[in-house]
Image 1 (cartoon, rainbow, N blue to C red):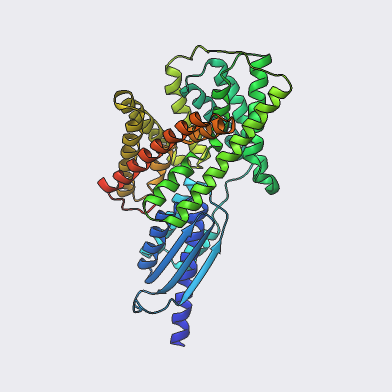
Image 2: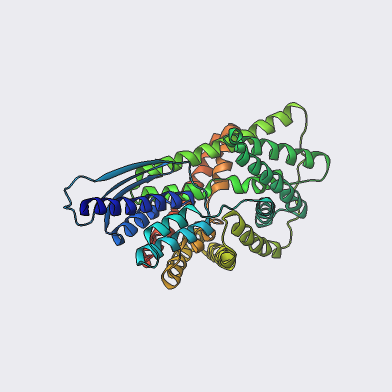
Length: 414
């Protein structure tokens, strides 16, 4: 009977840890942080866990912490999942449940029920806010890229359309894999037609602004950090996924451009009068609120998300103006990483609430897109030059994140 009770207790603990790992993966936690979080919670529950996380699967191996180190694992579990989307609100909730169970504030069974019953972010209101966030982000990026008023307005409209396509792809699973190609194709055609027949536009600015939410800059940055930390399987898989997204976006834009040339639609040369400088600052503020929606932050965390975006952007911009864009990106990433670790230490909450929205404006996704666009247009030298710029920016950003963690070690894994 005692052995049976011990087995039941062991299975109860590993079920909780496995469900915790699944929930963290669903909220977009990176492989190094997810594995550290799972291993830390396991130790606090008296388990020894060896975990391996990739963007599409996890392998968890458990034994009692008191078992000899050379004893084979008692239980091994393979979990197959789709890549997770960043959901800061659910991540914070999952982290809070894990803390409560590990500290004994609630029981393991109660913790399992809480993890199973996490409310989904869905409904008409949330979908409307998400589409509005796509539009706001596009307008903000057009302003930050020194576009004119027409670029900002058309970019906002096209961004809303991309948000609608993203919502449709989420409901129609068969179309999800084609989202990037279709979105890039539609955005490029619309921007070209508007510039040719309605109002002069800087087409490249409008296209990048409209597609900015789909660009995998954050995925590229995460892949670089994972590779630097020797998480090779996850890093290579994530890098390949990001490159695939870039290829689809570039192909969609090139196909649309060639179609416009084929039917004789050409945009006249145009140098816009940039919107006033203050529009960039307003754009960053608007982007911060949009990121709070896109990353699904809880209402209490919206000010944190907005402040993080503002701090990272203006630090990187100020330092970059004096010492070069690359060094600005490095310092911006370093500062935001230190701040995120301080946030996690002081409030015992995930530092991702500060780190993710802080680095999103620094990631070089648009540079990678332009590089592949040039290559598809057979301008290989310009494409390679742009690709090298992307690699340099990516290295500076990853270096800032790593140095920030070295200056102030995070107490929270997430």
